[in-house]
Length: 411
Image (cartoon, rainbow, N blue to C red):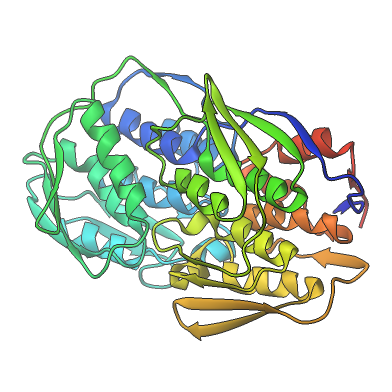
């Protein structure tokens, strides 16, 4: 457990060294594996998601256990269906077993792959028993469940005999992540285009010598969160640039509406508060769902009545993030109401309690987002290690800013 004393002086000054983007890193790891290439990385993040995928791609021995890592699992499934893995067991924690993979597995089966489902059809644990047919030229898949399915198929597509046409059904969610995949593929020797609601990938091979991975805009959201709530000081965050291929760089616009100004400088960005908080806040997150926990805790801590749209897919993340944030925000006096399955309103009743117990629900983004509630009360968070999934040094960075307020305690 982690105890965080109530923040008495919320002035933020300093420099934050963010981890590399795990979204970019995981794409490059899969590209490297399918190409069978040697590749040197600069700024490869030390996040658990990246380490899990790297281990499974590099080793063919023993079970392949993905813990709670959804993107690595989905990427690896396409790799195993392409290359074969000697019926290696693929599994994960209970929450990962619950997360959707059926549309991806059905697409791979359409391509000729076969799976042995050991407990329940289209779920973990499973084994790949037959690789896909490399002469497959075209398939269809829903774009409304997870963009990771589409990216996973795109990344292996150049190594099919004729490339691949991926026809998209339904409204696409998290579209910037598909665009990120497309940009990286085009930058590294493979033709990839989006036309007539289909992604067309040409046959070819990836070309690269070394790769520098951008710092993670998703991780930066938690420091925008702290700045927006504290409203004093300046923070410099290294390795972020204005021309990023990461969709979560939209937090520059999102937090500007909450009074946080971003200045792009050589080597990174500087943020500070400028202006008052809005009376109300409304945002559509269908393209950038990962920043919901940070933005949600910002408006809760500032007691800004808000409406978030595009939240449906948040229920299938590492936790049900709508429920997790609702439960953790009750002690802050926040009241969550679903307007419909894709739209959430937040209003306020009682004032924050003196002490608040935070449940991470095994979700790194929930723990980091809720750390800002320490401006209102003393916190106890059930798991400090959960941040290792994306940002292992988060608590160290938090303590540098606030003077060692966060301390590990025994249960």
